[in-house]
Length: 183
Image (cartoon, helix red, strand yellow):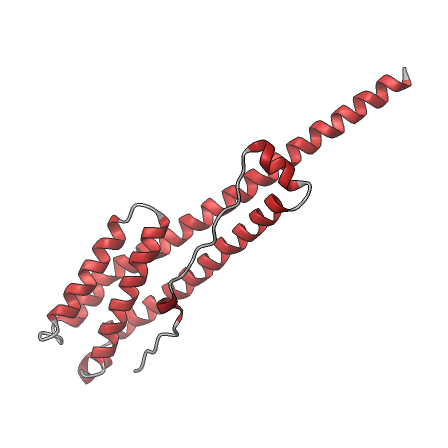
């Protein structure tokens, strides 16, 4: 009779381990999906600020229509991007285009002093910080997930459940440069 209880206890422990590892993978997968959604939210917020920024800038930059057109195209690309990699790429193009506006704004003292323009610059800066944090959170989740899928015994359960190693969110080299914003 004691052997039966020992066998039942062993079976319960084994089943519990299977559930524990499955739930760990699901929890990490959900964390990664949530962090991607947060990146998407911040990129959308940035895209939504662009029309206000352009409205503040248009009156001052009548001769800079190509820059304004570039920003508009980059915003449209961000909004229509299908997956997170496309959104990040389009977001980086938008960020680059916005840097051009801020650089040209240096030639317009009245624009640099415009309260609305300054407020929009501050909001964009805050959103950039949130995007950077969301990217870091995503990559931290990927690191935890990949560690679990490549270390024992997690790799055995990953193989059993079909969970594969995932890629980090890569940032293009040109986006790694520190933006220079002068007032």
